[in-house]
Amino acid sequence: MSPPDNMRRVTLPIEGLATGDANAVVTWNPGVSFDSPLLVILFFHGREDNPQSFALTHHRLPEQVAAPTKNVILVAPTMHVSGSVNADYLASFGSIVSLVEEAVLAAGKAAGEIVERGEVRAAILQAKLHLVAYSNGHVAWSRVIKTLRSSPQAATTLAPIGHSLFDCLYWSTPLMDGAEHVPSEHARFSNIGRAIPQSAFITTHFTSNNETLSRAKALKVMVENEPTFQLHEVVPARLDARNIVLTHLPTHRHDEAVSTRHELSRVISAVPGFDLPASPSA
Image (cartoon, rainbow, N blue to C red; front, side, top):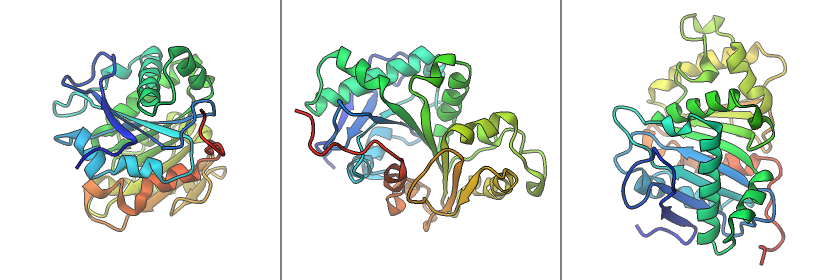
């Protein structure tokens, strides 16, 4: 399958990513404007044999990013995989900023909308992150969370507006910290876990045969015991901080978790703000 016009396989000058002709996929809404606030999605793949091809053929990321009327770009870094994805490249705030900067530059050039690094840095000052993990990508998502929690700069620069976890709600994720060793009916958020939805929405998505579905019961109890959090069974029309979605997808196929019902598009559409301008920037 040939890549669509709004997707490129690119090589980002980021140490620690997989080696080869390209080490990331970038895709963008065809009407994207780098003069308006950007929603930047960091998408972390799992243990797929060919994550770049999988992004197109199974996750259908270009199609899902193009569908909502949102000013959005997505970067899916291609990581080393040896039993698990290697997320060491996300160990510092500076490395996360560099990843976003290089991805925005690559997407802007490919879209014919931006050429100067100064324009990229100006765009990032207005941007927010939406962190998305699929399967073993929870390792990279967790690493970003830990890095941002230890970085004071993250409060004002590239602060996450939301998180989406597709078939990857493992006990080891920060969201489920401390909930593994108690009965589900006694599960409660730890201070670490509670801090995530206090500042950003959370969406979780489960296929019927995935092992992480067993965590859904615990998460439901955790949310119900937090009176300021709002639980949803499907993606609502608007997602704000303290909104937590726990949705069961109408498929048993793990490789369809992201694309079933265009679930990622649903989430992007529900993010407040970041609407496309009336006409693309010249």
